[in-house]
Image (cartoon, rainbow, N blue to C red; front, side, top):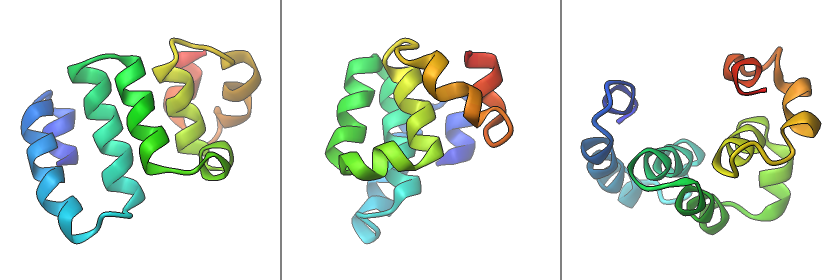
Length: 97
């Protein structure tokens, strides 16, 4: 599913995630990638809703990748507060700053 996402086949990636997600419904990787696919297929609010439905607020605020993606999905909201501390952890954070 990740390879399909990277190749731009977001809808096919989502189909693969549905199958894998049935076996591992609480997988952080599956649910985060679903949100990323939703961002590419739909929009930021849809992707953010996917994150909100999949992860509790505490985890969304503590996990670096989820914090980064929340900034991206909200169009850069709170970017200056969140992204600088993630530059050494997530390469894309510098690009999104």
